[in-house]
Length: 411
Image 1 (cartoon, rainbow, N blue to C red):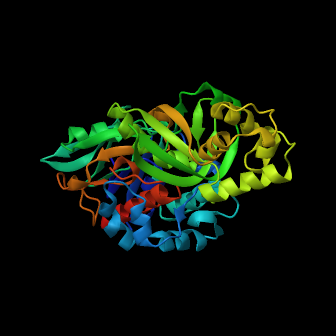
Image 2: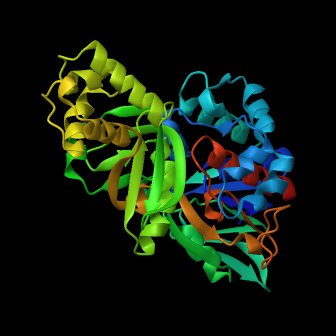
Image 3: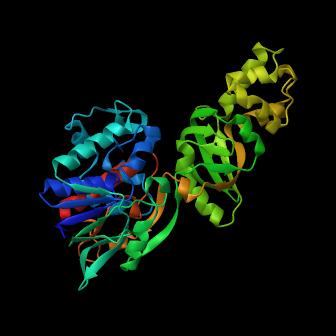
């Protein structure tokens, strides 16, 4: 039976990078993947475009992560966004930077990212076996000895990298196996919950707005009437509620306050560039210029057409009255709703539908300089299985590549 220097479990971004870096250091590497091909989740990330990383500096980068952000400082010091960009550009892949510092392939094709990774795996003589799901990591005299798969195959190595992902999108291979494997070896699992998910809204009329997208909307989260969080970004209405980057970034906070049993609302500011006085002046100007225009037509200057009917219904105003019939109180209602349109939250989508899993292997039990377990010598962790998660914008993908690279560099 062949013995390897290292076995990497999981062929996602973190696992592939760990195998590549270990291969570059002339280690004999085996990469095991339960699916029939690598990078399943990578291929669907960013709607198939793959937002690799973000161009912001490390301070701003870390601020995008939740509770365990500082665990990543050492990994980012060794392999950060500029290193990742060079890795791909030196491999012949052209990249671009879009709004918000998002870094993507110029081709807008995630498969081009995967192709580069596969070429590096091949060039560094990494052996890959697909269709093998790891059941457990074996120990001999309290030392890593290898892994056993569900097909009862035994692979030998003194070092194992667990990069099995989280619980989100299980059809891509993120079935949570790594948590059970780590727990059996004595590791603590920070409770798992969804991060970066759409939100269910109680008001039925949102289904009439399905497909409407708002650019740079400002959304504020309220729980029991108290402001909890706020974000700006693109928003999309769905048949069940809200989606889009700004909603994803608020979803973890929504999940937390819902668990506390609080009444939760989202306040949408359709025109964040205008304050109350500016909106009031704009409405008054419309009323003076076009006194015979209907309120519905007047609002076309401020809202997407499909929103107006339900918006005015929400304000309690007849859409067919003329603007010169609007009372001062009704004008204030319109202004209030343009800047603070309240929707009641019913819940968030389950973890299976989350872009990222929050929780995982406790960072207290992992050496941040090497990604090696503090409990078991020779056991390493990389990627989403670790309790690190961030907002949208390429931050989670960078964390996967960075922790993977550090694993491979430490073996």
